[in-house]
Image 1 (cartoon, helix red, strand yellow):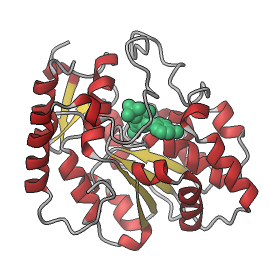
Image 2 (cartoon, rainbow, N blue to C red; image 1 turned 60 degrees about the vertical axis):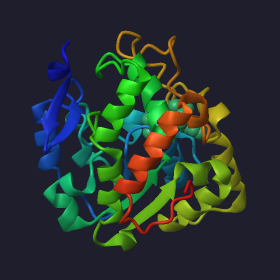
Image 3 (spheres, helix red, strand yellow; image 1 turned 90 degrees about the horizontal axis):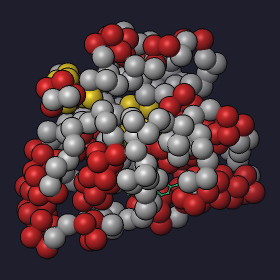
Image 4 (cartoon, rainbow, N blue to C red; image 1 turned 180 degrees about the horizontal axis):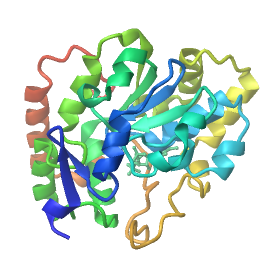
Length: 287
Ligand code: A3P
């Protein structure tokens, strides 16, 4: 398939057409949120799957039933994805959990009226680039990344799925009603998973005892999640996602960009980052 066939431009953001046909985007536009919905918002490759494991475990008080029986895409479905309209989401009991890769400014009208809670996960963009580069290679619904230097320019120009990392992060950091949004980074999860689980559970107003927190953090370790077939994408057919080339749960570390980018590429990345992020006050862990 050609690039034009693989991507749809929706509100000036590239989306993989196969996953987001027009009827799915319409479904999302008309979706009715509830005030107690929980939304996991991310730029792709920032820790979505990880949060799709952590949040259901917190909300179930540590009961692993849902993470053991439901694939992550049904457990915390993406509202913009074609599966969403088939899942009878309006019949799910509260509190419902959803994912989205949308930028803040293109979220649907009901989101701004109802104001559900959001957990926004961010990751060092050089690691997002690295993870994306490997992920694009294994998927048949994305434009192949081509040589790394070429993909780097596409990534920095936002000519990739869900658009520019810079626009995405800035849109969510500039969101109104910030108090209903928890900002957390992949790097914080890596540095102290247990403490992160505590903070997320506090944000979700779910009180858990120390033993449960310990169990949740243990289940969500990279090595343990990798064994969970409901979260490691092994249920996806190989023609759609070929994990013999690179696994979805690939390395699970912070700073892998050092093994991926050349010195010149890293310098170029930093220069673009500095320019695009010059007005951002938020203190990122990786800066
Ligand atoms: P890498 O490719 O760097 O390994 P997303 O779910 O948003 O697509 O992000 C995928 C990235 O998150 C992958 O990064 C994946 O390995 C990482 N990831 C998923 N679960 C993780 C976990 N429990 N611990 C650390 N990293 C995890």
